[in-house]
Image (cartoon, rainbow, N blue to C red; front, side, top):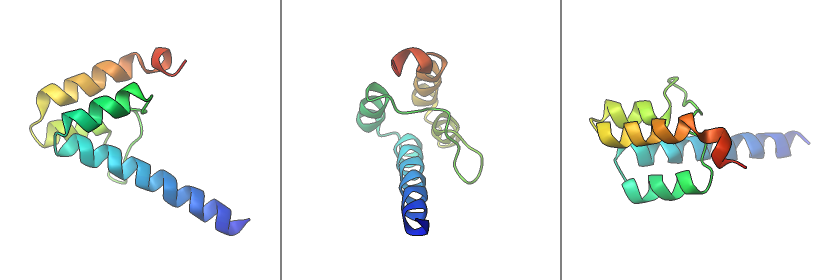
Length: 79
């Protein structure tokens, strides 16, 4: 049971990391695919930053705005 919990926690951390990396480095294709697949834009990394924050911190302002736009409509995309 403990191993399963740790495994799920590690998977969640990896998902968060991958989302933030794609946003930070401006990989628009990956970000758009993740958004279309229902990627949550509200998850924060260990530093408390969302993917949109990461994009903006790397001067990817347009991508950060796009992520935030999808985030505002996130509940509609998940259904």
